[in-house]
Image (cartoon, rainbow, N blue to C red; front, side):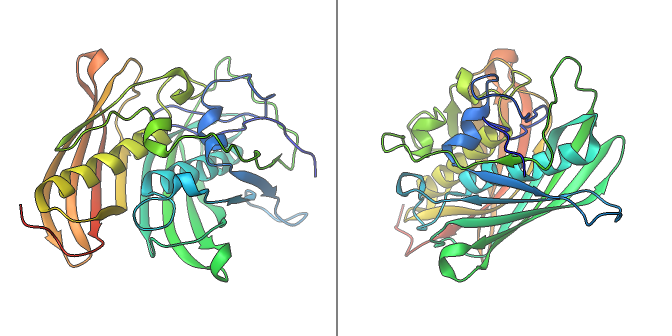
Length: 300
């Protein structure tokens, strides 16, 4: 197998791409590197039709763990977006992709890691691609952690260089003992209540120059949990989500506005609308997030 160096990174909501370029060549590579996602391509058997399977492995570093004990939902979505989007991109070459939606059902919050992932392309064509991403806990005998669907739109990449040595291999970045927690890494402002803001720093932009899809997912995760904790109290963690990218976020800051819409046995359901304030408040994403309670609710 031939190794591709650098951040052959994730996709990104409503516009994003990963390439096998040298490290530092493109912005946006930092997101997949932050989660230390290792990826390798498994081509179909010789003579067999169909796209490659893409497998991945990501350690769950202590500073990335959420209140449930495992990787935060936003982190899991970032990893799924990076792996699933890349698998879709390989399937539609010479075109490339932008993420259009993510859907994740989380089986357990207390996974130990490393996470083992497998992205299988279910459908690919000139206009779009869809893949399923299975996530398992390598530190717990390979038990299921999550099931996800990634939908991407296929676009003309224009001047974006797409050079891959096949089969693609992206090694795991080394651990960084000084790395910040997810909220600091994603530049999410501190606070409580139904509105949460993210500052749109350059390291959060994908190769198209817009906000990385994983950053949007991280914002929706934090915002939904804050909204529920602010009303119902107690320890909470975002668990399941359906996230639809509506338009690229280009300017920032980006604001998530939450509304609690009801409860079901597995958690409180929150509607999260994400807006680009620097672009006149244009809506850029919409999510439905289920927030689980990790203990008794406190009176408010």
